[in-house]
Length: 68
Image (cartoon, rainbow, N blue to C red; front, side):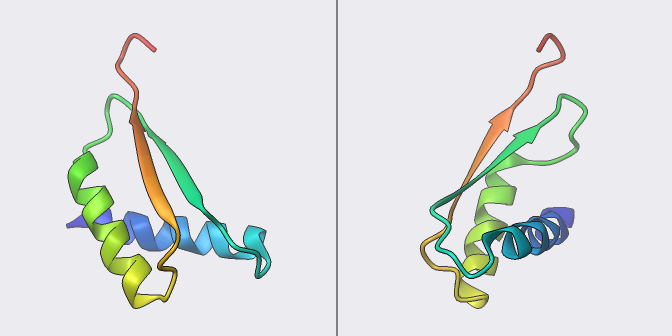
């Protein structure tokens, strides 16, 4: 399940920019050739968020069609 690795990478990008501040929402755009299951990404974010004690951070995914 590569969605978990993606979530770990996303969290690794968010943390330095947050600089200890509270983050409410993390938005991710997923391209048409994504090979990512959005529901799995959201589920994995929940697992990572709970494990890493980022309980208040919500993840939202936006799917991009090949026409966008």
